[in-house]
Amino acid sequence: MLKFLLWLILFVLCWPLALAALILYPLVWLLSLPFRLLGITVKAAFDLLKAILTLPARCLNKLAA
Image 1 (cartoon, rainbow, N blue to C red):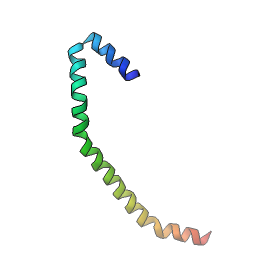
Image 2: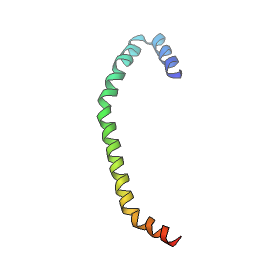
Image 3: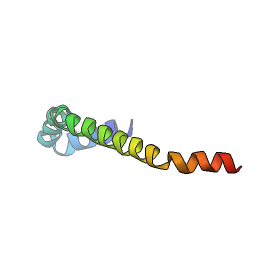
Image 4: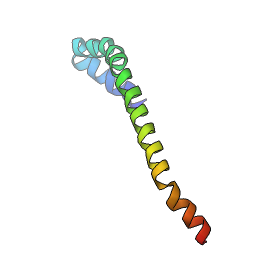
């Protein structure tokens, strides 16, 4: 709701900029989507590597407890 109100204020003060933002926002979102997916994939790969590397320590911790 706040974003909508800010957009309305922008529309009243500077309508060409508001219309450009309205048109360009979906395009920017579509262009950034592959980078988001790449970031999710890299994070998942690092989390898997961390889980594999810490597995022996976690197993030893369970045995000691």
